[in-house]
Image 1: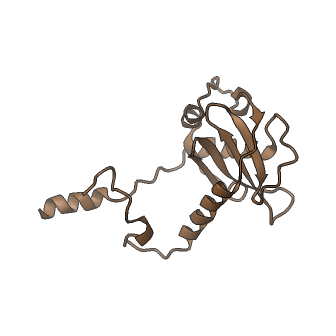
Image 2: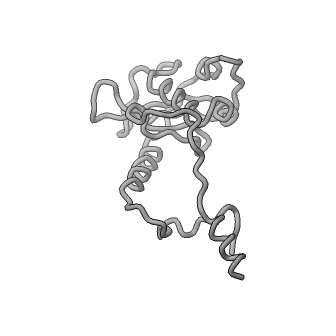
Image 3: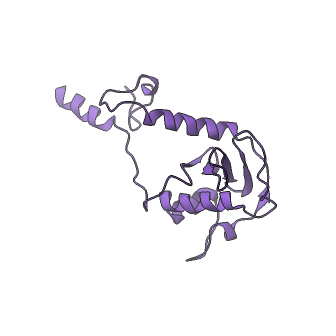
Length: 163
C-alpha cells in the first residue's frame, strides 16, 4: 500500500508546461487559451495605470479589446489593434504557433502571420471575467513557497485520478 500511495502522491502534482520561448511579462503579463478564446491582459503603451483585456474567439475569430473597466479600445475597427497583436505574439511565444492556431481553428501558412490568417470582425465581450482571472493569477504569486496543497485547490483531481 505504501508504494501505491507514494506513486499516487507523485502524480498529484500539476505539470507545468514551460513556454516555447522566453517571454517578457511587462507588456503582456497574462495570456491564456481558455473559454474558447485566446485572451489576456496587455499593458497600455501610454498610461502605466491602464491595462487592456484583449481576446480572439476560436472559430469565429471575433476580436475584442477594452480596458479592464470596459472602455473600448479606440484602435479596434475590423482589424487588430496593437493590443491584440501583442497578445497573439506572446501567445505564440508561450504556447507555440501550432498550438495557438489549432486552438483558434485557423490555418497559418508556414512562416505566416497568425493575425493575417484570421477572419477578423469586432465583437465586444466583457473584460471582467478575464481580468478577474488575471487578478487571481497575481494572488497566487503572493502565496509563500510551500510543498503543502492549497486549500482552495484541493478538489482538483490529480492527473485524472479520482480516489
